[in-house]
Amino acid sequence: MVGTFSAPRRLVAWVRGLRVKQADVESEVTGPPKSVAYDAVGAPTRAAQSFADKQGLTLKDVYIVQTPKGEYLAAKNIKRGRTAEQILNEILPRVIHDLTWPRSMTWTGLEGARFIRPIRWIVGLLDGKLLKFFLRGVAAGNKTRGHRFLGSSDITVKDFADYEKRLKANGGDRAPGGARCQDRIRIGLLCQA
Image (cartoon, rainbow, N blue to C red):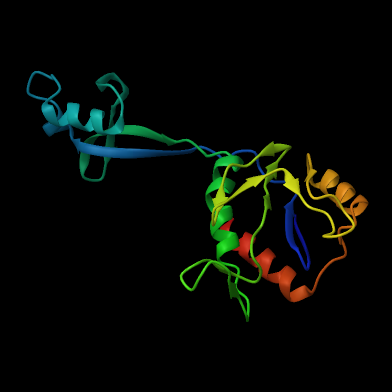
């Protein structure tokens, strides 16, 4: 479930029920024909050795499969799934960068970053653990800020529930923003998922 809200100084997206890790993907890779992979006495040739090396395996890990074209050398290839943390660290800078607005501002010169407002801080947490990504020179962290005049300048948060509680206590606006802004955030996150 993806939830979003916005206020004049913040855009927030939170996700519940995110998988901890992608599933591993197993596939079978075929290599050279058996007649090329083994010589007349059954010893492996350079082709068999090269195939095993290319797959990151030893010769005892490869096997023969029957295909419509005949017998071929084959190997099981397992692509390990990545963790949610790895994926989020990679895609969140792009998701934030790709948010578009009818009017954006440039705050570091004409060649600088464009966004609806200058990005001063980013809170990036996954199950209470800091995400490690940067966007336009700003590192994701666990600190946010309350109301500009009525709240604390730095508020450390542990998770989304703590974020809401501490923001409310420091004069921050938690009321949902306009639907257009929420839809942009939600679409950006879902397109990257």
